[in-house]
Amino acid sequence: MTQNTRSPSRRTVLKTVGAATALGLTGCLASGEERPDDVILPPPENYDALRDADLPYPIYGELVPEAAVPDVLTGEPVSTRQFVDQRALLLTFVYTRCEGICLSLGSNLVHAQAAAADAGVSDEIALVAISFDPAYDTPERLRAWGRERGLDYESGNAHLLRPESPERARTVVEGRFGEAYERNDQGEGMPFLHTGLILLVNEGAVVERAYAGEPPQPATVVDDVETLLGV
Amino acid sequence: MRRRDVIGGLAGLATVGAAGYVLGTRPAAGVEPVELETVEAPGSDSGRMSIPEHGRPTLVEFFATWCHVCADSMGDLRAAHDRLAADVQFVSVTNEPLGHAVTREEIAQWWRAHDGTWPVAVDDDLALTEALDATAVPTVVVLDADNLVTWTGTGRHPADELVERVVAAGGERA
Image (cartoon, rainbow over all chains, first blue to last red):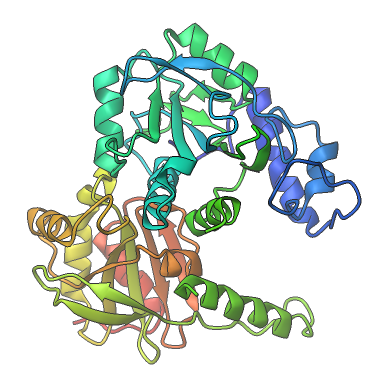
């Protein structure tokens, strides 16, 4: 989980981050008219611009892409669509090797899990991280990574997904979800640069929020999760 | 209503209030203090602390017990703390959810293991994290006596730099 997402060379990364940054600057383009159905949260402030930007990742109102990837906590595959009609989904993309300044991508899952537990709705949300570095992120390392950050495995709503191969990771993480990543040979302690995407999905499999570009405040993510769950 | 909601409301008012001024001459608004729980640990008493405290400069470091760079930064923080006068508010803060990700005792254990000698507080409601816009760990924020942010830095910083940043915000050396 690197902090430096602003100077990568892979075009898709630049496109993603550049678009998100530019959109941030356009400020408040209120979108009242064409709000998608099947969403609970109001549109993000810059929704019109986001929609026009043809971003590589799914945004507000779009269906979450489908992918089934083995969960290192159970050994069973978990599909990003299996929670339909049962749970909301908070999904992010990680690698465990970050030894530098690490964004709180994993911590957002931990905060959301704690907030759901405090509200007694642990069974209404799934917290899912997909590794894009399966060559290094063995099941043991991924489990240790989650445990270290305080992810609770007992409540059964956390899933740490490890694609079967680096090729499969590329297909799923970048191909389906638009979370671009690349190896970083310069950055000290940061083997990867990546978009830092977090998706909040409702139980109809529709994306409610796609946090990308600038890292979101954990409080923003928790507030959105609480609003979505009605707590 | 959560504390961070109150703070969000206040921040919103501040933004509206400032909108009447010409861009560039906008008067900076000091950060509203947040009252956090402090943990019983070396150099830290169990209690509550208002951060950032009005009337004196503050250095607040956001860390996490899982963060290796945070652990590696403790020597520099300790040296900076030793070299700054007692009137500087010097505090480390973790926002890991208490009772879920960590317990008070685990924070105290981490503090002992890494030789902390100053107050350590918990922001598990994320109120201070949001007020100071910390999105990564470690992040160090320095504020002056009016609670204006004078510097924010992520990652590890030498003790010399930390001291200089606090002195630049009006802090005195020990």
